[in-house]
Image (spheres, rainbow, N blue to C red):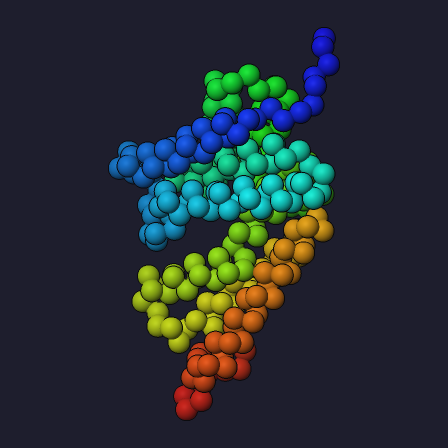
Length: 235
């Protein structure tokens, strides 16, 4: 039995082809909605939003993996496939379905080492894990941390404010919506294990706190759960 040489098994061209496949898969999931795809109430359940989220997670997972000594290729490929089944599978099985799609793709496109395929698929399958991240591989940790961090900070705030319009809320509820981003960020900061992810989480939380302070400073009548109803309003 030969010794497997450790190196980068994914070329830039192969990764670009994977990205194209993932986007096309997501787009097809939307087109086939009548055939079983999940209901999508908001724009961020579209193929474009889901793909953008995936690319954000790829970037974060690469950064964390590079700084924490994890296998960057495993982390970035797993990140690319982690939500591929999000639009055509139920939430509680989308991770397993995504791992299945990743395996089929990797085994039929190129000669990737078996160990690489296994590590990628395991990370995809476990990316919704809610327990202690210390029990997982470094690459899976990178993916989970990246997935959480994309919902924190400026991006998470923009999406939450966008959601207000689709829930028929006015801008006066903005502080409440930003509070949701802060809570999500605090939860992420408490769960991440790596120093890199922790640093990113706290920097993003600081930005959200600044934005909330600016809102309350510039809009005196802003609804604020922390200080009670706006001035001039009864209980």
